[in-house]
Length: 35
Image (cartoon, rainbow, N blue to C red; front, side, top):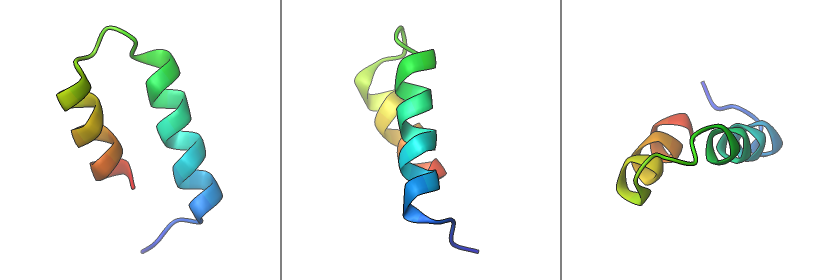
């Protein structure tokens, strides 16, 4: 169950844009889980 790289990149980009108040550590964890 691997999503296309472009989709993962878009998800990470969206998360970064939508969660500007999240701490860097939390952001890395979310991006890792998403990717």
